[in-house]
Length: 302
Image 1: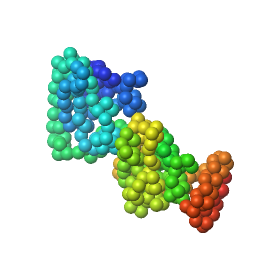
Image 2: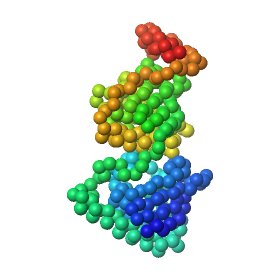
Image 3: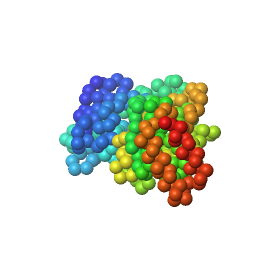
Image 4: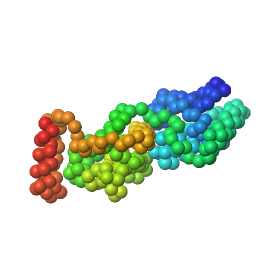
């Protein structure tokens, strides 16, 4: 096709095998869309197209992704607001006829893609067996309420903040987990109550004290809060990790990385951590043995 349809906050460019969606960068554009920049959506990654009336004299053209085709929507698990949905194109009502034309053209392309899957012996309406839409590129990082989350493409790291992390997480220490040790990621939007990002370790690769309980006390999770872990930072992060996990599952698992942080620390940072550890010890939240062992571990990082 090769045509361009410009809407509010986004422009869709229709190619022979995909739709290139470019998002505007501006103060009125939802931050998630600005952060995504642009995304190429293969026809194979879509299941249908809808055109419906919108709000205040608009119409909405929406491409519906196939389950399992996009790591971003898989990680979001239906928690995104309409305004942050990267598959919606909002247009003025006077563009409805033009939008109907492109919707019909795209439906025809999706029908052709469905037939190609049938010719390959695939069930045309089944979830995608692999991610067909590219995940946000690493390295990525964001600040949660209780720590900093980082992802370099192969390893997820949680570095706890002494002002926010629970004693359980301080006892467990900073966390590093390779994607080969994970089976998935659970993201609960910071716009909901008790938002968090939780890593789901494979059997035999659990972090110290990890589990399915409260994220505040799970070393495999970071918790969000007002201004911490915003959607436009934490969701692309979750999607990138999820895509890497699925890719790693197709390869031979790599050796497990040590959970303790690598390299030397800033002496001032280590001093702050020992000071906070002492406060936990004085409050009775850390035993004498735990205090001694953790202090020794921290001093070894100098």
